[in-house]
Length: 392
Image 1 (tube, helix red, strand yellow):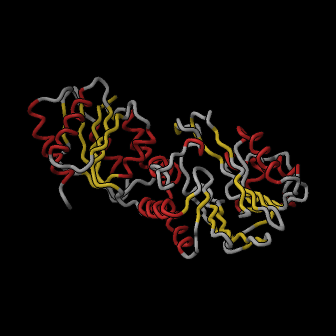
Image 2: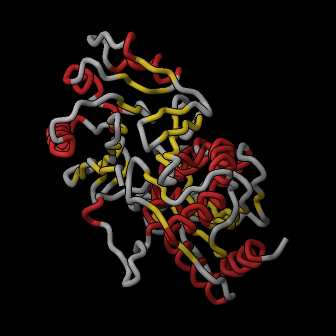
Image 3: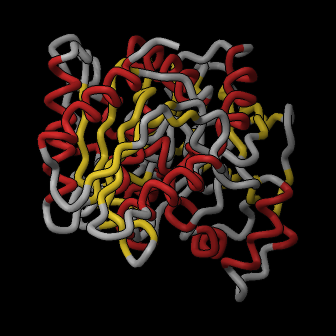
């Protein structure tokens, strides 16, 4: 196999893209194809530049680099472009036309224009026994993204697609060698990074289906093959269609003084008593926002409970719904519970925000609680549970 891994783990990173918690770190994946001509596939984040350079030099064993293939210009994969270009003056930089326009944005002091080699859909790069075939993947998740398919070994270099949070050093495997719970952090990654672009992901999946793909090499997370690859392809198809992955209800609440939380806890009990197969819960004031987004996409039905605030909506719930709008959330059913001591307003704002989402339904009744849940409120919660669980 002429494909060598030279990626690096970042175990010290606390927030990926300065917003997503990564308690298990992050990997920046990069590869070298050693053939008649040598191609480096992507670089790494500047945080791990030294380690990445050492891995590259150790692998090259004195050989020159003929090509640098840039699948994605985001800095966590492309920070070392200028340095590599300086080290290998004859090296060509292989990338899309859109990426070429970004090069001077990221490297204003490097004169790289004459070294750029533009690739488009269907173009190939001959390395000897290995041939890279390029696949345009705009908006998965940036407009300049290319993927490449290595024809002899059937490897798809998928840019940010099929990635996940977590360093490779922290990956766990089952007794049969398959990855342990790949989907958990891959799902959180997908919906927060690529979730808005389901149509574009579907377009790429159709292109990939026409190829003999035996392995996928993402820019983050583990190499995928065999059963892991089959499961990843299945889930990406489900996720990018905005289909329901798991039958159940996601209960998300935003409580100020505990009254709304108590109603949420009672709703969870009611749903379970009525036989709901799975009830996931998030406290939007404390739990990870990215995980809440993940669960919202995973389930087909949501119960939202929120306090009123300044004649509007308590900010943690507002932020959650704004994120759903941003990620093109669609085709889901909602049930709403508002809380207010003198002028309940949360239901009105939630209804308006959900109304801006595609093919989303709000079931009746919208339940109003005044400060604290009372015995008279429970039948309304029961009716709301029946409505959210009813088949349509």
